[in-house]
Image (cartoon, rainbow, N blue to C red; front, side):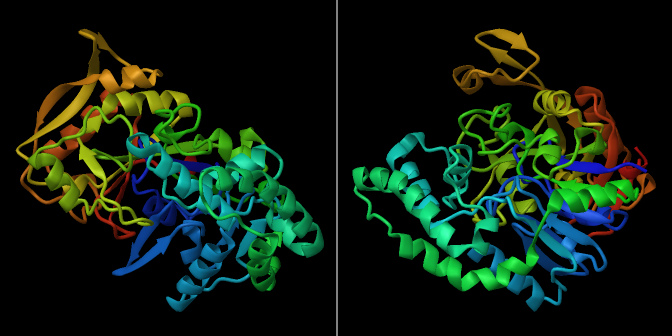
Length: 430
């Protein structure tokens, strides 16, 4: 058996939460390794919805250990609220099944203030952040002035670090015409929350090493998608962390050789939230239909997602960059009833056909999709759990996506429900 890293192969929102939950039945521990509470994973189990942002999707399953690694930035208030809400739904959460890394950076109110103010200043050129302070918190981490969860153990030292952090941010806030923040405004809420959080803190790397040496199965859960990666995505319209499987090792504290099988969660069409290039975006009736059928609204923000056709060029490129071994195709049922489906097989850039997504933001904005059309199907795929349950044209569509992306399909999801999944190849078998 091998460990599995689950990542998004597009611009996020591919349905990673359901797949992680489904895979967690065979896992011993589930690890979040990057991102923050801008991520949103919705699980539907026996008709009940569970919305997760910071908690790993494995937390819903009894008897599984869940971990938030140091690659995740944590808003303490948001985490406490999420734990409370899930407990209210009957989910058991305690230090026995949840560990948070001492080294995970803390998102502070000043980070949110800076995030929102920056977006407002950008005007029409805004990136489309969630305004939750994710980017500024990562900036402080890299600049070595951030606070970390382990700092909650010593509030005197935390106050000193907060003063140094605010000395930097208050200069910018004042220049932007915003109110400055005091050390007390930052530390007082943390003082109130620390007793709820400290019992969960631990050495994640040591726990993972124990699991690895015992031969137990580790499931790494990513957020966002490859094309939102800070280095490889559609920069600057990207997230503030690395979303690739290499970050599973770096953001959890385990050797890269332990990551194992990389499963790329891939929506059967394409969506994007916020600003940035989107070559296959459909502005007509089909785009509206995809959004309505797919309930394409952000789990965290409720923002409407932009919708369009499957982009095989982008997914193929994501597969090569991230080393994706297999694809988990999601939301196939949303395509039921379309007479014709489009698949982007290439782009034209200034009159020339190209087979990759360019790195230049100026060129990204100018590419036009080259489409191949394929016959759709009228039968329902909702709830299908085997190949035999799928219409022949749906199978042809899946096979064509495999050919164009070079990535074999490992699983197919046909509804938000946990069990409505077709297993082609078990990722844990490698």
